[in-house]
Length: 172
Image (tube, rainbow, N blue to C red; front, side, top):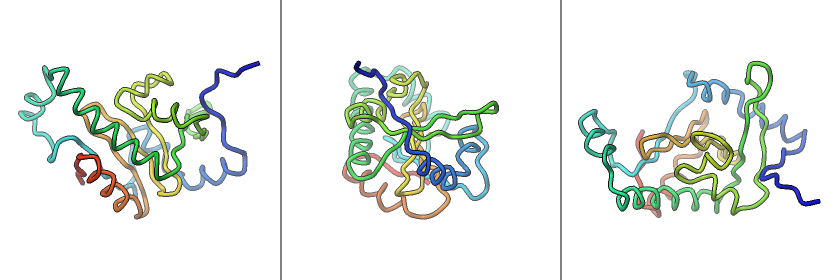
């Protein structure tokens, strides 16, 4: 029998370690970031958009320009995936407060998820993952911008390298 599952739960011991490492993840997932959680953003834009900029740059975008932006972000994700472990997670339990970490069965499935609008591959509006080796969560956003959430330093240098190689910008 062939399984159609794209993800597999990580082993129980590793689950426990990841739950402890990402004890702050539920707050981020519920948009209630604690004081100790920092954010670093990755964008196709070199600055935070004002309301006027957003109107000009996010509305009526040509298909060619959107494809260019998507390609830049997809390249960033590919570099990230190539250099560090990336795991999916789902919030479980009655209050959806307990993360369950899952590994992708193949790099191709992971690449299909970690790209613009890739969250739809798992029925999500946007994709979201964790990078255990770098101690951060990585979320897709709606405005051609992605966000790293973290509590300890480590992601900045790696993100800067991936951004430089991909032609995207880091915004703090």
